[in-house]
Length: 392
Ligand code: HEM
Image 1 (tube, rainbow, N blue to C red):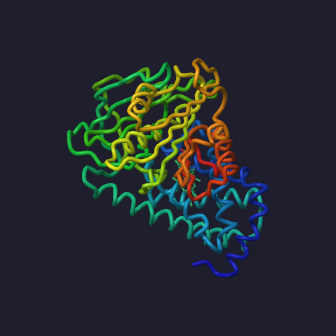
Image 2: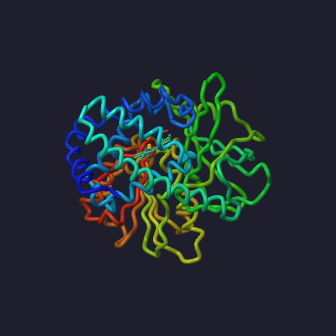
Image 3: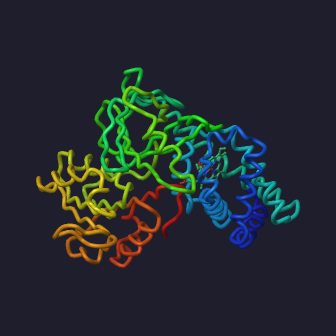
């Protein structure tokens, strides 16, 4: 429990965090990784380079200071982060390392005096405990459920299928041939691997891209071609792995999932953001009770759209209505340009749940369009690929 005075001091730091938050978390990462280089096996060093992770952590620290007197406001974010941490295998013993690096960075950049540092130490302790408790519960749940496990388990690649010139699906089944934990459409797994020539292990999350089939998992990985070093792992997976090879995998996690509801569902994706949507689409169309399903997708062109044949088949069977937007349009009946919900607003069902996944810029645009269409926030569910940032 924080004292009233500690709460007052932490809240009073909010303007300084808004101004110096990224500087603090930038310095925090330097201190953390210098003092504990083994953590480079856990952190995505590409995100470190791009500064994305710096921003995500700064936002979290800022939100904590702002809502320290009513943490219920940030519970949704806590759940998302705890799920991410659980997928990465973050342990209770990591928290003091992060706490001491954070306090050192705050002291160095803001030099706010002993009383403020002491209030922040208490505040960090409270927040860390919230995460530690939730993550412990997630580890227990994941290990206890049928077919579940703790940490990593070896999975064999039983099939690879090229979906588009850049996206390949990997079908994974447990190498021990045991049962495999069920998941909810929208969840992801972490893949742990150690590319040759790299000093540290790399961990990446990939959405499960199909409905649960009792046998294993499918991920669909886009080969990134990026001069900033992004794509280290995706290229390695595409170029070095073949059927019969094994991957270390953590149990399915994530709170961006299909809601239990009978409402119409509108699934909106851009590019490789299609992967969790495909899992949702397959799950919804296999349910006994038919639902009004709309699939909206934006892409460069048809050639780069994964699962297009499957979508066309579901449309033909009358199970889903599709609205595709291509920057390079090819055929009649397709929309040209970026996703524009105004263009199809007449066909969008009333009372629907909206799910969005794709690059941040596309998601921000779609979110604004949904607001213009007066869709309430509790009907909008989203997942940003890469370190998360709030859309609202
Ligand atoms: C991801 C906050 C503690 C390791 C994140 C994200 C946030 C965050 C906001 C981004 C989530 C997203 O992408 O959706 C926090 C807060 C902490 C904390 C507020 C303390 C109270 C820790 C600890 C570790 C850790 C103790 C382990 C050393 C990571 C890693 C990621 C991550 C590895 C994934 C991103 C990457 O690889 O760069 N955390 N975290 N965090 N966190 Fe934490």
